[in-house]
Length: 321
Image: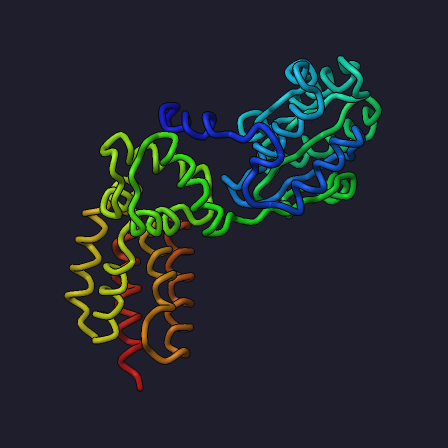
């Protein structure tokens, strides 16, 4: 996403613990660490756009006040994932004393599940050797990719996607401050498209606001390159009726109209399969075929051929009684 689409994410980033939406239990525990000025190494795990980086920045700002920049190092491990980063940048920062009355600095390592195993082993030793002068906040999408010795050295916090009510609060706050108009259908569409990802929600809202001060359902789906659930359901219903040519044509038109990739389409098809009014056993078989199709696409198969094959399997599944 380009810089112009990330402006709102920075503009509306919370400055205090009370402003953070969702993750109430995690925020409460981290706030207690800050108030006591004593915290362990932290590991934040969870999907993208749900507040891991935001909570880290709020923690640092509340802990150090005006000197937070001097006591804080932020690195993105997906850009710098080698062992030299740990041996040079991290170690040089960790071995120096902090400025102010907090006895340690903080290193925030984003996307640390992208670190190589060798870099993680080096990080493990650094965390152990410099624990008196430095604390680590590690952020990742998949904690299973972090080696056990690092996990055992951290207090692990597992973040969850924001729920509908919390996304509504964020939308209402932004629309009031930016003087935007959102109807209820547009809000539901934003919740559907963002899937609990606050950053994605704000990026889509900003993109929509460029087109119109009044955000509608149509604009949201157009900007997000996301097919309406109704259209996907129509394709699936054609498969249930065993009308393969129409289902194939409808799917192709939908993908071209919304600019969907094969993986985008398969995810929406899998999601809407559950809403069909057919036997539960058939739904299970359809979802199973979605997983097989997605795997083949990831491995490099032609997406249109695989989607046609998927629709054909759906027709065959629904041809049996």
